[in-house]
Length: 124
Image: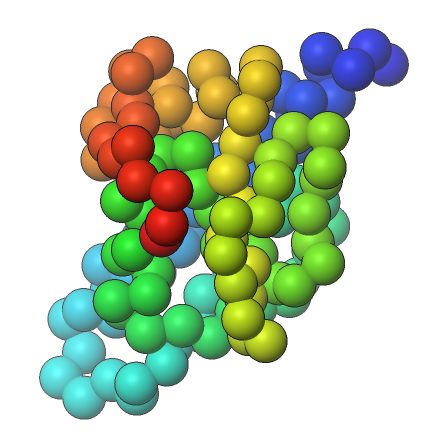
């Protein structure tokens, strides 16, 4: 297995989890009374991960402002493809770099295409 293949596989795993969370968020927005913190799935690159993160709609949307950022359980980071840009005791926000960016930008349903990045901000 080459590093290039692994980097793209990790990015694809993360974008798949992000797609699930997008559908989950859309459904939760239809609920009349939602708790302050909602349960989303960890968007890490481990396709076997079954962990969840507890965030508000606002926290999730802040991460989603950038197609290269994902919300993960603390410690669920793949340093060869991403760096932690912020976090707390409940979650970390990771940002993709290098070859993984092409996959994450192109797969973002909110802003599809190679230039899917929507934010140049360094904070989520």
